Length: 93
Image (cartoon, rainbow, N blue to C red; front, top):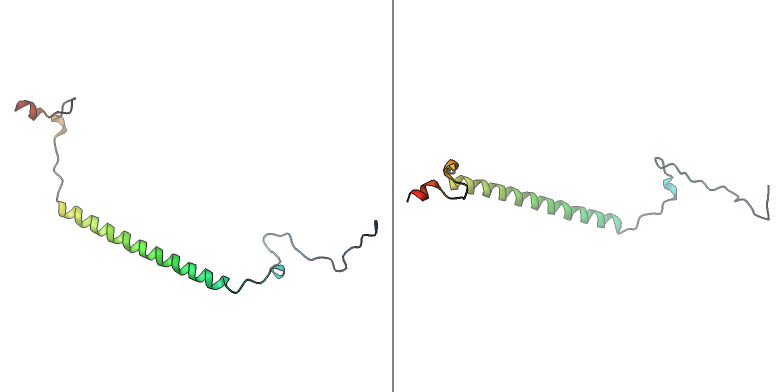
């Protein structure tokens, strides 16, 4: 049926609305700079992550060594602390 002189396209367009199987033949070619740019960006991100992991590991080791060098914690008897925050031993002096 031909209404008002409209002409149907001679070869019907072939496209797929299926999101799981897109028609890749209609995609344009990637620019030449895209692959090197993505590879450089990936390399920079990997280098930064490696540096951050090394710095984190060194800080954990330094913190552990500082804790070991500090020695054991001296415990205090909190039962001698009154409600006003003073020690019962201070009142005796």
